[in-house]
Image (cartoon, rainbow, N blue to C red):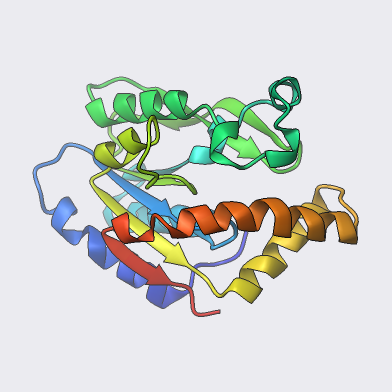
Length: 217
């Protein structure tokens, strides 16, 4: 995993100040943006920075990608060639998790993650202890305006939209697809047919974010 640009991380951290100064027991902050914008890296970097500043266990990053439908289910639904599109996620399950995290009633909550090694979700991989003050939720579709995705925005206290130059994103996406076994042409076809189609949809939700961040490289 790479590193978030220091200026971008500083801007993200500054955007959190009003919420950290509030009387909220738990803060849910979202990091949205197109594929390969650097959302996962930023969410992890922000959570780690908060832990360094306020103590271990202050923050944790939770990815939306943990709610990818299993590959076998995508095959059954005829959606294997659209993996990563909104309809290939358990959106209602994601909303349910956010509601549990939002309640912060002393319950230990386990969140799933996604493995790029096996290209599948892994359940109960991320423990969110009651003492966690900030949950950084990252994913493509945090700002979609239609059900059940629209409930996500209502459950987040702050949403930041992270942008990155398209050439850099495309390069990262091509490397990502080749790493999972696709040949050069197949990776190119997937990125420009599927990933960039999703990116165009995500771009239409940009205006719904509270903060816009731009990765400089």
